[in-house]
Length: 473
Image (cartoon, rainbow, N blue to C red; front, side, top):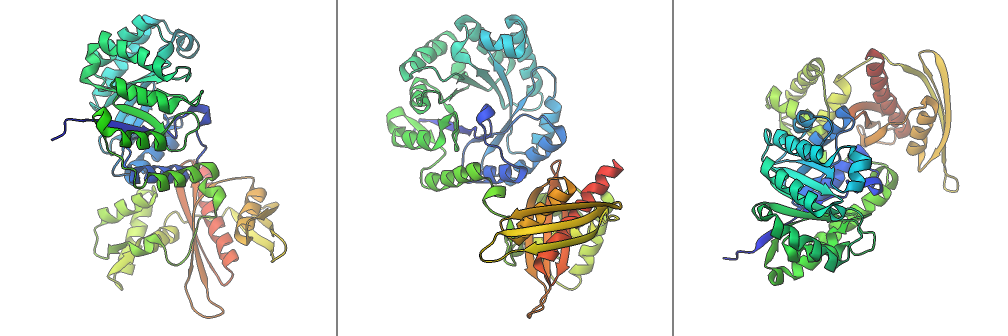
């Protein structure tokens, strides 16, 4: 049996500082799903800034992934460990991170705290995290420019406080591969406690040498690499996995990621991060959808239906859950199986039915084979006349853009489904729209012989729910 040590891969695509890709809520979840298929050991998520939105995102990602573990930073300056843990606790063996600059330059400008006080703060925060999980990581930012004695003291205290992983960062990306070795080897010698935990490595790609430095780090004993499937200023996940896969026997290591699907999946991730789902295509799903192939037993319990609604992404009140449950029972009397798409349609129809704030909807759509689509939209908000004109990539996109122009509001379009509900030339079309506001989903439903009109009705239906909740708050 091989005694080779595993090298873990932590994807940091979303945590590359100012160069991180700007992704929507839905795009972030899609990215994490792809990383999960790639079997990366950890996915690093951003720290919680907006408690409501960011906590919901972490919970949604926790439900979306099954192979990868999640890592989320806690604040050093203020105790928010309980907030982070509450969002992360349902994930499989989640990790809490304490990310701190340890060079004199960054300590002075970012932490505004004396070295000895910083060490105590780090130890206190690690101790607090250990109350929730043993999977605690201390990330020493700018470690390569830190005073060597101070760095050693920080690492000893962090390990003593209970950190199970220590990550050393070349934040400036200023070291050559041989310099990386000269930095790491003495640390392992002077801080022998590091041999009892996992030691990770991160490097900025300032000189296009981050991958080479990462290989040298593994040669020195590093057993976790922070790499990015979509690299903007990090180690390349695709490159580091490919190299280590070839050199596994030479380094006496093993990897949890195979190379069979890495090229395909990283190409998809790069395309997502460059273009964004919302910019590369209108998220339209026609009659045949994934949710049509997943069915729910008509005799499921109230609790099971509540969990299914939650997995769809909805956060309903108890009253709305009861309305959906009552309607589900009515539908289940006539059929044995109900698809998730049908359940979502019930949510759109029954949940949060509100008095319309936007009324008197009028529109003109112009499109053709030689001209782009243009929409002229008129509507009223509590009697006030609003008007918007916009172009778009197709009639529906133009219509939605003109609604945004008229209302002066932009919401993330999470999903747009179309289904024919009758047959023939005068067939009725049903549309289902999901808009996301402050991380929460709002669905709207529209039916018309004009599919564009059905889409507009569904959009306004969802928009009315958002406005109602804002005005009631």
